[in-house]
Image 1 (cartoon, rainbow, N blue to C red):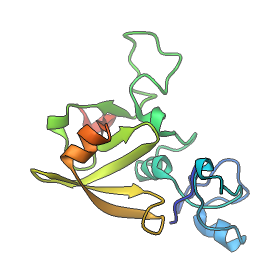
Image 2: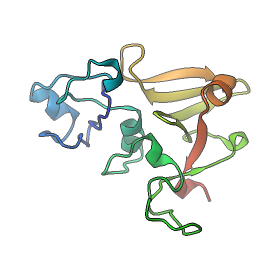
Image 3: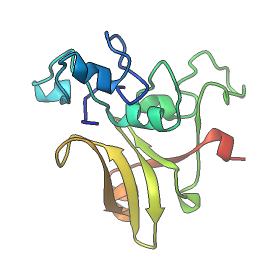
Image 4: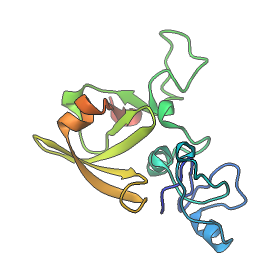
Length: 163
């Protein structure tokens, strides 16, 4: 499925608002596949595809509303939460220490999120929906230094798996 900034079109979800129920139906309705960020000045409304946060929401079947990258962080999605109050029903991921990262954890920062496929001493192998290299969900490899020191990603674990 091609990258589409703001998109949530997968095999079983659709962007909101849209007149289609999934990516395949959007293509059947002659919608353009893929798009770029509004920041590039070439954004076209009414296109179909999935962005990085939509990809994570689709993997974990988080439903609606689609969360943006800030919606994966503790306390930020549930704005009505009081300090010290449990937010486990509204925030699907829990921040974890870098030395505890494992397969299927996510790496999140403002405007980008990806899921870990594998890890070794120096590298992190991820799946992400990105506009790079043809603009679709893809497997990429980054050094741990790039991920944590250069780009400032924070690791999170899917809350039901964090206990």
